[in-house]
Length: 379
Image 1 (cartoon, rainbow, N blue to C red):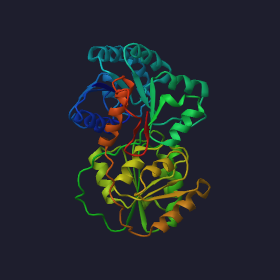
Image 2: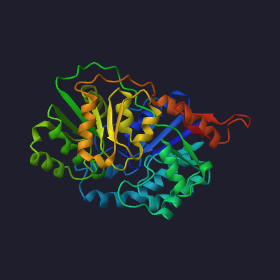
Image 3: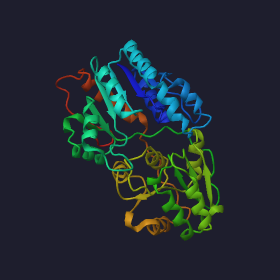
Image 4: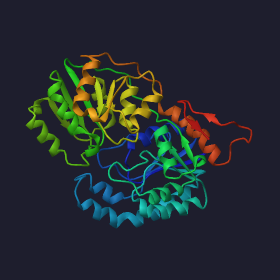
């Protein structure tokens, strides 16, 4: 099949790359349409084409100052020309299915999505069904998800949230998140105890709660890595106030090989988020054998259901930082990593392969509903 993967804002270049590669390896002709990544150079295409035609100028300019307020002005000026290029590129490629990963501006994106749907199925992966901050507008969310032929979610929690918005069950497909294919480990873990927190730095992810737990875990150091969408300075100031500044390392966004190196050095991955849709970071950590400590709520608990061989310590949110510290104590010092999970993006690609054929009408009429490799359902 001819497949167009769309990530106009380039929110997840590593995920896009591995998914496109896995689909290409299954014999599909894959175009990834995206924008320049602001935090480094994405992996070289392997078995697919990547075209950075959305926000081509501003995407390169913001690399110099990714969080400058001027980025909104520059991106706004480029939005309409970018949409024109995007629609023309999809029309020229003429894919069988368009699969949207992320949207750049929901209110305006609905227009070009409607245009693309005139000629082919357009599906969306709702990586986060609910907004992480603030209450969702139910009518707006229903309009968003109704704009697509199907909506893919990675967890049962996501499917439940879509149902609460009134999205019909026959328009929702649940396919668990795959994992990146990391190279074999070659780095020995350091002495001591290393706690990892990586991903987008947002207030709702609970970094402040994690830092408050550090005084009760005196033998540990904390490594924080990610794009500071919200200011990192309050977390740094809190570490100074609690006297744990020397035990906290702050890194900016890391490219995938460096992130894998950190995960091999780490002992525990923590995500004290109160509102998490699921999270690629959780799946990556669990797949590499890292124990995961997280609050029991949102999508993290649903992710744990798909990986029974992984080590998850789920803490009730009301236990706050003391609950995190207690969970780390239960894990014990220098706990050996759990088994590496064999759940790469090839499994996700296999399930999507079947899903695309059904959406495109190519599945045989007698073909039964497919049970996903990871216990999800592919209608």
